Image (cartoon, rainbow, N blue to C red; front, side, top):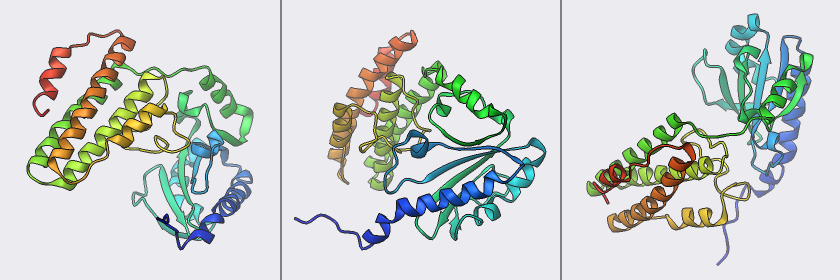
Length: 279
C-alpha cells in the first residue's frame, strides 16, 4: 500500500529556506533597533533540532518605557518580515502574537522587559542573536546551572487533572459523547507523557502541548513511546475502557515514583478509591 503523498511536497521542501529568509529579515530589523535590548530563539532553533516544519519561537526584550508601545504594535512589526496571512491572537494588550506567513512558516513572538526574565531551565537551550550588555547570556549561564525537579504543587495539579479527565472520559463514553470522551483520553495520554518527563528530571511542556513528546525529537524512552502508541482507541466504549485501564496501571507506577522522588506520602488507598469509581 502506498503512503500518503502530499500535493504540497515541493512547497514543503522549501520551508527551511523560507524559514531562513524570515530569520534574516527578523535579524535585519531587530539588530538595528536601539530599543530592542535583546532577542533570542527558543524551541527547536534554540535546541538545534529543527525539522522541515519547525516554526520560529522569537523572544524580544525591549526597554521598559517602550514595552507598551511595542506590544501595541506587535502585528505591524511582524509584517516587516514577510507577507502575513493571518494572526492567531486578537488581544492588543497580550505580550504575544503568532504570525502565519504565506510561505507556511509561523512565528511565535513574545515581548518582555529584562525584569520579566529570570533564570529558568526553559532558558538553557536558547539561541541569542542580540544581547546588549551581555545580560541575556548571564541569565542563560545561571539557567544552565539549574536542574528541574517537580514541585509538590506541580505534582498535585498533575494528578488531580488526571483524576478529573479519567472520570469525565467515563461519563462521556457512557453517554455516547465519543469525541468528548476521546478528547479526555487523549489528555490522559498527554498527562502520562508529562509525568514521565517529571520523573526523569526533564521540564515538561505546558499542559495541553504535545510538542516533541512523539517523533525523533522526543526524550521519552522507547518503551514509553510504545505504550503511548498502544493506547490508541476508536469510538467504542469497550475499547475506550480497556485503554483507560491500561493507562491507569502505568499512572499508578509513575505516581509511586513521583511520591518517592518528592518524599511525600503515597496514599494508595485514596488513589484506588478515586480511580475505581470508573475502572
